[in-house]
Structure formats: structure tokens, C-alpha cells
Length: 347
Ligand code: ADP
Ligand code: MG
Image (cartoon, rainbow, N blue to C red; front, side, top):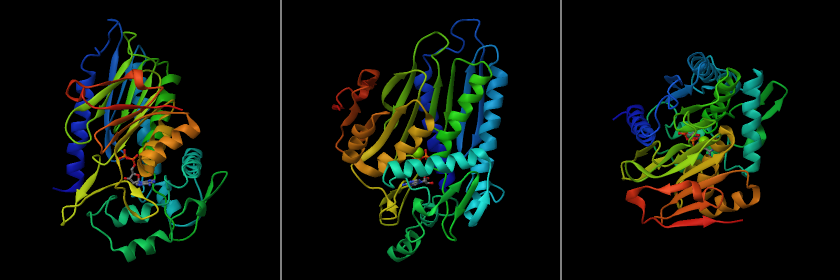
């Protein structure tokens, strides 16, 4: 089955998961509330913006327009995008939001010791994760490509971005999170104080549900269908990275996921199945979910202890969950996963 189709089916399943989790939240719980849902496809995934209140319809449409506009700026494959222009090498003048996205990716690359590596594009492409067919590149090919990888090779000065020839940016790990924050800004500017933004699993909640209760967000079971549990939250962002999101099975049966370890140039294969990050901003959640997945369980716990500006739920190959102390009371295991051991990570 072509990769894209397989991925879309997975995304639909994920969406169904979230929808199932949400079936208890009535649209327009206060009776007089309008609920408006804008569904669309952008950044290679299905997205939706659900807004409540009198200005919901206009606001949801504007938020959708904004995400689609950013997709056009940040697509790595669209020849008319700003990222495509930047990837051509040399000094390129870009829009303020593109300069901000790149600066943020560089900041997060530094913070995570290069676990988030914005210049991995040539390697991601060689594995066939962006366009083309999936394949297993040779060790030699990877070593050659890794010579052009390294966030310190990128310079941002004002709105000018400079890349040496052969160095290429990939916005895949942060673009959706960044766009979800922009969508939230637009909704708020347009008078919305209750909304749920879901950009391919990058969730941002504005306020609470219209009935005043918290939102319930499912954490997908990385090894099966359905959810392992539900997070109750409001006014924050939640993003998950996992092997199940996008992967392929090679001829020898090995399953390769789309998150690459920048040190080896190969898909991550460590003790984690999925990492869910909860924080105030979608961009931080998106960057960290990818980076902490790369770091592995111990590295992720250490990163939390150093920064503590986010909460996380890690599902690991040992069958256990590792949950930071600030979120433990908001995470409830699903009926089928009541036996799962939940370890609380403390400072
Ligand atoms: P998704 O975008 O599917 O929700 P992520 O946010 O974890 O998942 O981003 C994964 C994408 O980021 C990959 O498809 C690839 O384009 C890119 N990528 C893979 N590994 C890394 C990495 N170590 N650092 C930065 N970007 C990466
Ligand atoms: Mg990410």
C-alpha cells in the first residue's frame, strides 16, 4: 500500500480515537453556544479547528486560512515555499514568521543538544519519509549525508537566513506545533474563548469546553487501537510523537519509524514507544515530543528535571508508563489498561 495512503488511514484511525474520546463533550453544551468545525488537509495531515461562541464560524475559517498559509510558506517539497527557497542555499530573505520558526527550531536544537535537528532533511529524504518511496540507505550514503547535517551551520539575521550549499531544513518536527499556536492566536483575537485545535494530533485547547468542564484528550495506544488513557486539561497544548505515526517495514521485516536519530542518521529504536508532551505552547510540545523521543527514557527524564517547563507521559517498551508529577492526577488509564504500571517522575 502506498505510504501516503497507509499514513492517511492511520491518521483517520487517530482522529476516530480522538473523536471517540470526545463523544462525551456535547457541541454547544450551554445550549446557546454555536459550535463551528473547520476540517481540512494541510502539512500532509488531516486537521480540524472546532470553535464555540458567537464569532466561532468566522474565527474557525480565519484560523484554517492561517494554517494553510503557513503550510505554503513552510512546505519542504513545494517549489514555491520559503523553506524550499532557503534550502537552495545562500542568503535568502524570508517572512517574519518563517524567520521566527527557524530561530525557534535552532533554539530547541541547542536546548536538546541536537536531538531536535532541523537540518536532517537530506537524511529524512534518503529514507523516503518525505515524498518518494521508503528505502534503507547504505551506511556510506548516510555518512555522506550527515556531513551536511548540523544546526550550527544555519544563520538567521533578522529576516535573512543563510545555509551553506547542501544543508537543508526540515520543518516536519515543529511546523504543525508552531502553526497550532498561530491558529490559537487568531481564534482569540476574534473573540473565541473556547476551542479545540487539532493539527494532525497537535492539540491546542483554548479555555475549557463550553459547558465549563475540562477537555479530555486520548493518548493513543502505540501498540494497538484505541487509547491507553485520557488526559483532562484546559488552556494548554498536547502533542505526541511515536513510532506508530509513520513507518515502513523493510524486506527483512524491520520496522523503521520516521523520527531519525541525528547521531546515527537511522530511525530511532530505543526504549520509548511514544512521548506525549503537555505545555502552554504547541511549538514547545511539538519540538520536545520529537526530541525526547530521540533521547530515550533516561534522557527525557533528565531533560524534564533540568527544565520543568512541561509535563510528559512516556509509554515505554517495558509496558509501563512514566508520568511527570504535575500531570499524574490528570491522566487516567483506560479500562483496558488499568493494569499498566504508572511510574511517577519526580523532581
Ligand atoms: P509528526 O510530524 O508526524 O507529528 P514529529 O513532530 O515527531 O511527528 O516530527 C517528525 C518529522 O520531523 C519527520 O517526519 C521528519 O520530517 C522530521 N524529523 C525526523 N527526525 C527528526 C529529528 N531528530 N529532528 C528534527 N526533525 C526530525
Ligand atoms: Mg514534533
